[in-house]
Image: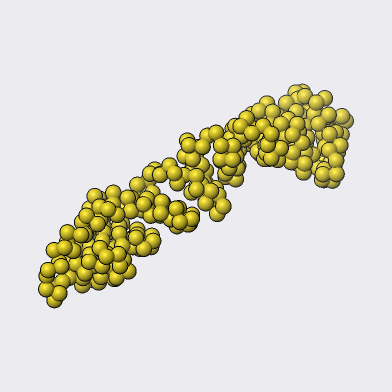
Length: 301
């Protein structure tokens, strides 16, 4: 903003001694901007765009006025047009939107800060103000945009690696987008930072372990799938999936040809408590009967 004032004020000073009849809308806008009347300045800049030929500088003036007024979409559109004509204006756009994002955050407007930061990223991808990483991550998380939240949490961890709450929020964001492998890493880190709070994440650990077990089984990585299923059974969470975990483990053991262990896991389905769906219990019993009395090929159950 200071750079823009440096551009506007000399023009305004030159205009002060001129004949009012000779004044352009752009000069009247500069004068209004200099005295802090941004709405009037914007009106004059818009008039200049319609009736005069202010060039890219006129576009930048109007865009900057929109930013000062917090009107991100209009500012972005004009900066887009100015940057297409001369890429040097990209820097001004980024500077303006980052400054606005900081201002909105300081005023407690996380939506406004996020909107301004998105505009800055539009002009220069990858740019991020470190102090805004955590509030933006939390904003997107509250909005259910976990993909965006996760990216900001990763940046926030650079400054908050020892904060268990930030590590936990990072894990939750990764779990929400289905990246359970990364989520488990952060859950483990959280457990090390706050060992007395591990009860908070038992359900999450169980859910992610069960999901990864399914993924590994589909990939043919049976031993790794078994490890994840054993983690679910050891945690005994989530309770509703315990019978299914026993059944999935039995299926893997049967595919591996370990019939005795498979029978044990199939029998555990019925003993997993009231949570066991009746249909799953019957399927497990059918598999037990197949193994005990059916014809199986060598190496299979």
